Length: 238
Image 1: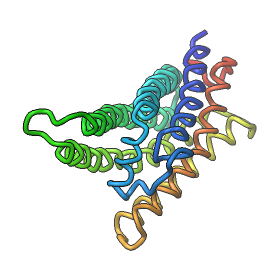
Image 2: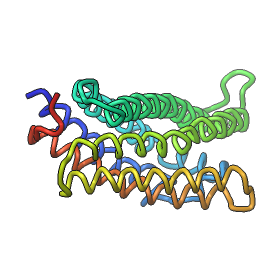
Image 3: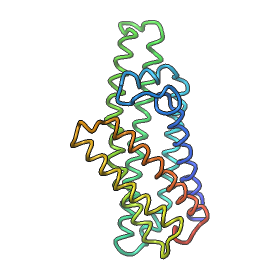
């Protein structure tokens, strides 16, 4: 039972965050806009505030589930001999830090949406609708810069997790393959991030689009790993 419930939480969290990402206004299927157009992204949230608030809240829940799920591998990693075990431990720690930062980003998004909701109400003292919209824009821009931490940390976490997990399997199969795909995705994500940061003409929007595609594929690998944990495979057990 050591990994069953963490595995279930990891699967549920990954599925939920994929769903909320698609349904968050401005980000996926609803009023999709270029996320580097900060005014348009802010306005998309303000145009569907109730949906945006709920999707943001459910994203925070999904990140908590994912963190709990991945921490279920820590006992196994701590008992894993050699460099592979240390890589897996470090990968788990980085992942939890990364997801914790995204929870903070979620709180900032809640505030952005609230400011846009306030802008639709009658003037409050000396603050006008334009003032609330300006505050929302400032927080949204800051939120985006904080969220950029995801694209710096997820490649490192994925490389370490992928290699560390792959060391626990003797033969190639769906779980070892998923672990290796996770590591390869991390390498690709790191290359894209460093390219975007050192070559501004590459474009932040291009980096976000490519890395979001990579993240979607890697989410599937984590669902597979979560399923292995749920099945209590011995490779995931302490």
